[in-house]
Image (cartoon, rainbow, N blue to C red; front, side, top):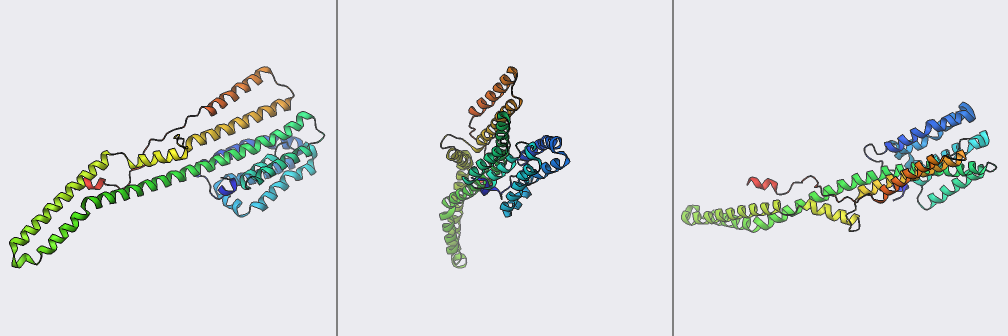
Length: 338
């Protein structure tokens, strides 16, 4: 599902706060760099650059982006590239990643990836004349920022999908329990109720002329009613001790979602989080090494160990088979009081 398809459906709960927290962590560092190289005016431009990404990250802003996607992207592009004309190559490296992330989130693929590549090429063209390490930094920093923003926003969308799917599964399970309960009741007492009604109607005109015959008819009706009640109790006991409809529904949904392997949405979300962390950390390590020109062997070794740990966790995240039952809907439990 593309970001454009999800942009009008904000994530429930605090999931959207991950993207907001990430942007709020990046903002002070980039503002300090802009203040050092371009003064207060540069800091103001950096603050303006983060407004629209933050607007997309918060739930109320999704509706604004859905209505005014193209004008907002144009404004973000202007704020991204006009500072190059004003401040030159001293402008902060990597801020075009905000535009790239918004393009990935709001434009349908594959056009979004084509535009993202154009943003990277334009960033590299604007840095022509810099040294090779700075040019490499100018290409990797926007990728780092854009993919981190895209991954965290998509994570929030997956959480929204998970909540929606859970609610639909509970509703379907309750509907199935109601249909099954109705079928069991119909099978248990439907014909007997018709027989009781027929005996009662036949006994009614005999009450004055032939009370004995009417009494026999009512006795037969009472016997049939007791048989129906016994049948209902047997059906309730079989339903209570048989396999849970909710469990079967949950298992079948899990098998369908995981292609028969029991894979659910939760491990997929975990894998996406780990993939974003691995990508962001790897690119940041590369940026730091390229930017400094050299790195101590201890720093490189520590970076390799951390990347290996995250990669192994990503590879071996187990698929969870959810055996929990949704809340029991209105089934046959009230019939226990009969």
